[in-house]
Image 1 (tube, rainbow, N blue to C red):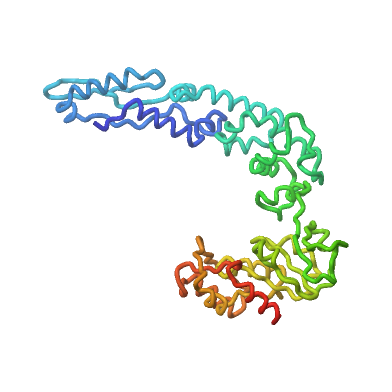
Image 2: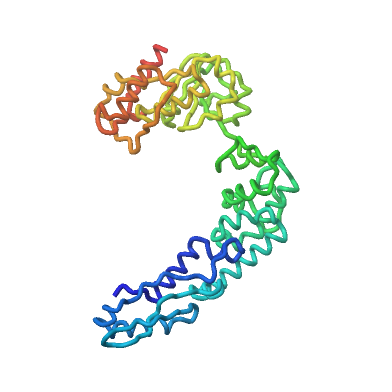
Length: 391
């Protein structure tokens, strides 16, 4: 029979907990009680046909009614006479609801967190209202989170590394692990002028709130021995911070960017040239190097949709960049070395040349085959040497 059992009633209350509604009621945000629960009960036909089952159902429902109240109705039957059947089930208080699902202790812990927040950082109460269950998950960390919020209020945009925050029980790994929560709390607790609204997302956490961030680096090789930066007879494989790289203004005429580390390391000597290890999406580390705009810039990536998407992104910073070995002839010549691109890009790219756009369209439309890709390291080395001879 599909009549409502005490387990069904408990599940209804548990759903209110899972949605955070009971904790919101505990904060006085919603008027919830007395609360009527959904009850499906037998009708007169079922009473007649399944009297024993109905009797057992009534006994089970009423016998478990420690935390809910049953309202009865009289069901008259021409053979069985008048019978009292549960008609409504009510929970009269939040305390009864919490006891019914075994959440009294959790609710008390949440109430303590609300009390602590009201006393120390009342501006954060809206966050507890919005995320009561998340607050409860953070119960052990909440005092430290409040400490960090208070510290930043006292030290706006401190221009130090997170590691340098000196608070009892707080370390940089704690802050790193709670960046998402701290960002939401900082946005509530800090005045707008102390927040860089242009910096969004986890990667921009430090810039948004005025901390020093781990500097971006640029890794490059000088391809002309005559332009060596280091006074040693060794490969000029160098990594600098973006700021140091921006200030170089090297005496090179050509700059190559490649996405594959082995290709970067094996890139052959080229007069008055250098090669930069790109390592995928993101060219913010090169953006401040304005001297690159005065050089011939070449990008060599995979021949797949993501390779062209990365090229498109590079041209956001360097519109003059030219693609290298990313053409249809190279792709078709290496047909036997094609692989499969797991998740092809489908977005519109606005910074490609006509030929690049046509090949990109062929790739994401599968005109040449299903999810075709040619990784740059599969291209014959002699093709690279020949291409370099014509640039």
